[in-house]
Each structure stands twice: as structure tokens, then as C-alpha cells.
Image (cartoon, rainbow, N blue to C red; front, side):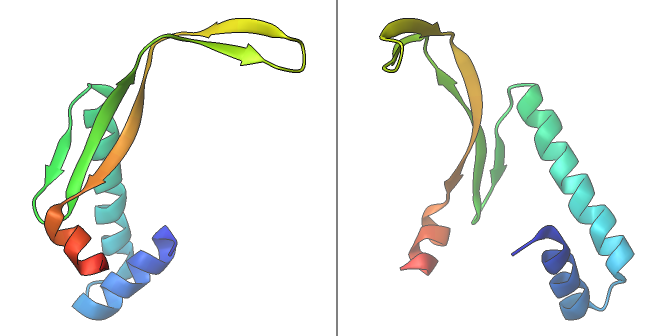
Length: 90
């Protein structure tokens, strides 16, 4: 499902104009991005958590050149579904 399909579905179900729904969806996504840039997790009860996972520095191998390289420590965004959400998927 694309963002545009989500906007159309919400607009159809709520009767709110698609442009307004689109602005709300964009605003939500922006706030999640900003929070994650600030290294903050976003908790949505009953849905899940947008969180930052820290990856430690590690050594990797380039097998074609038979060399090793260091991958520096870094943070990645992740999503963890809530238990209620997971139950709905079963």
C-alpha cells in the first residue's frame, strides 16, 4: 500500500478532503523523522514503536578482493510492532 493509497482510504472512510489527510500524514511522517534524528523513540500505543537501534563497529570482509574493512558504529531506524498489533496478524 502506498502513501497515496493510504490517504485515499482515510479520506474515503472519514469524509475529510484528501488534501487535508495528505497534510496530516506528511506531518506525522515529518515528526517521526525529526524525533528519530534527535535519537528519540516514538511510541504509539496499540500500534508499535519507531526506535533507533545502535550498531557497533564491526569488521567485514570483501571476499572478491580478499580484504577486510571496518564498518563504523552507526544508528539505524527500526519499527517494533505492539503485542496487540502482532496478535491481529496471526
